[in-house]
Image 1 (cartoon, rainbow, N blue to C red):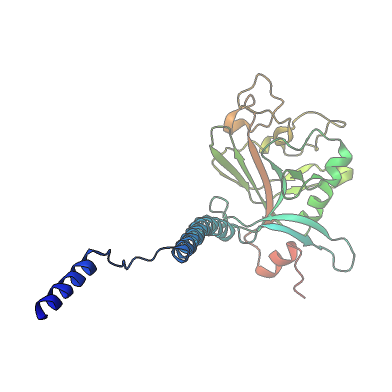
Image 2 (spheres, rainbow, N blue to C red):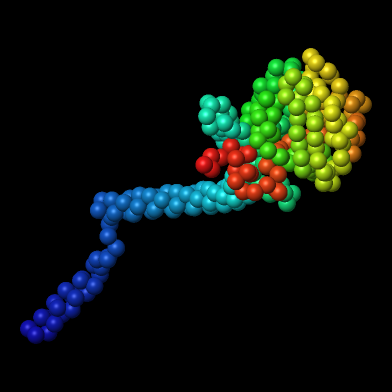
Amino acid sequence: MKFVNVIAAALIISEMASQPQATTTPTGFGFELLQAQLEAFESRMQKQLDAIQQNTKLNRIELETIKKNTAESLRNKDSGVYLVNLNLSLNTSFEVYRDGSNNHGFGSNWTVFQRRFDGSVDFNRNWTEYKNGFGNLHREHWLGLEKLKRILDTGRHELLIVMEDFEGVTAFAKYDNFRIGNESEMYTLQSLGAYSGIAGDSFSTQLNCKFATSDQDNVGNNLNGIYLPGGKQTTNKGIHWYFFRGYYYSLKATKMMIRPYAGLDIKSRLLAAGVNVS
């Protein structure tokens, strides 16, 4: 009997061994749902990673732009349009553009009364327009002879002219006592003072000459001539400075600026700049 029982137990054990073993790997709908959730999670993580990388790139570009703009701002920390009132007892204020860059070592605080660089403003204007001014103070413009005269009448001023040709060469001419007459005197160039610079003195030949416009006298336009791109020309009608590039080369850019004479005391210079120091 024992023998039979042993045989039976052996058969039962053999049968159990022949049955497939349970796997530890999950199967069925529960596993598929879990797998789908994991794939969705991976997709969301990848999208977030891509967004972070894109934002990092944009932030880097923005940072470089900020650094560039900040550097430019520091170089021109005082540049911009300012309101000037030369007579506090009268409401005669007007706007000017002040150049805050170092200007070839001559320093800042220059009031720009003529600027050209792309030909976007037509300088072939009549007497009234040159008297009152035209253009955009932030870009190409002519401040106006009457405003220029009022500024110069506050005291001794120096004149700085910066010019550039189409080859990228920059030159400048500086005069330390710039004066013009009033309208009844046709804004005659009365004084320039001593010259310094690297462009050559091409302005002194016009001392005691009246201001020229298209409807008054079309001779001697010089820096207010027609904008002609390309440099070398077959005509002398362009923007020229004889001792820099000659009469047959039309310049790319010019800027004419004035500032209270550096030899004045601080109070006089502030008053000449339209600042109330009383």
